[in-house]
Length: 564
Image (tube, rainbow, N blue to C red):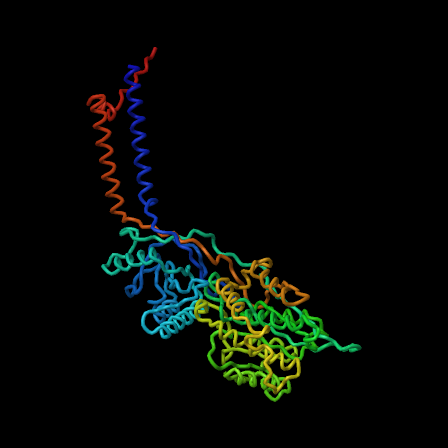
């Protein structure tokens, strides 16, 4: 009797082992089907005066579908994946404006737009293809950042794995078998907590100083000329907003101008009688909030000593014409002097400079150009830019389309030459003379390699101010570089105020799983279970006999309790 119980226990243990094996195999059916892992960049989420914009969710766990999709299709549990080169902006705009449900949106960018990539080649007409893609990205970005989108939106870069997944999804959709829980397909998963508001985001301003040379016995404060550029960016994807032109080109130019004048000012014999103030400001996309805070923090005597300021904005992709934007009337003495000086140098360089006057409305909080913050404090200032018209809010602020291949370091070097020569002729009293202080081939020549190296760094460094910490390596690099060429370098940390509220989670990891259909899983489970049952029965019969197999399924007799 004891031996029989022991054999039954052994057989039950075998049953439990087999069942455990079944559960493990079933659990592995999906876990072993991971297709790829992708770095993705989330569409920015922000509030403007309390109104929500951008993507309001971050987590993803839905099947993939391709575009175009069937009219009236229920996509509330589908992540639509679209290569940007194939996108239909009109269809997407209508879908967003109609508020139709979507499980998520995943947009694939060409590899040429990976931050830092310089070369750009397309089949056929290279220039036409380049401009076409730039226009598509500009229109797409403006659509997304000005919409309230109640589902996750991510950007990723195309590669062989992504293209293979996309081809499979398109093939299944084309034959009428879109991915779902019943048909299987690809499942896209981003496991991340919901976004949180950024509390007291910081903006950082950096200033450097080159003091002028006073005459013996002169107790008057020397006049000052300020050269300013805003360095931060804004775009649909904060993790990709490198802004090589807007305004990386202005930053690179400012640093080169500081380097050139530091060589002149390092020698008392060639030091000018003007102080030079260099400012790298933050908060540019948000009505130049950082510029305003920086100006207000300056000593009043210093601010009053500024003859004029030159703000550099988007100067890296122009051919033969630049624009000087002003708020004061063109008849103003300083404005006339600046414009004439720039025009003379431009003529020698074989380019043109135009003048654009835009009167500011002090009651309007919108600040289109950086020089307008100076003008509001009654300081003469101009903006030098390749843009002929003031951009709208959150436009031309260094988004997806503003990458390295669209910026020409030769154009930046030409801009540096234009500004530096104009300033030098004013400082040293050479107005109207064709004296080249920064002549090519001289020790004071513009260094194109220096400009190129900074453009390369800026083109791979996202710089959306609310996501830059006070000790961010990029801010420290700017401070160090300005310290190499100027004195009394100060760093100012301020809280970004105004109408903007930002949310975190700008990057994530996307897991793409290839999952089978429910019918396939059930069939697989049935076949696997049948095979294991047959295998178990065969082993029991061959080792212990048929009677032992039957006894496993026979109800044991109940024990009779003896009564007194």
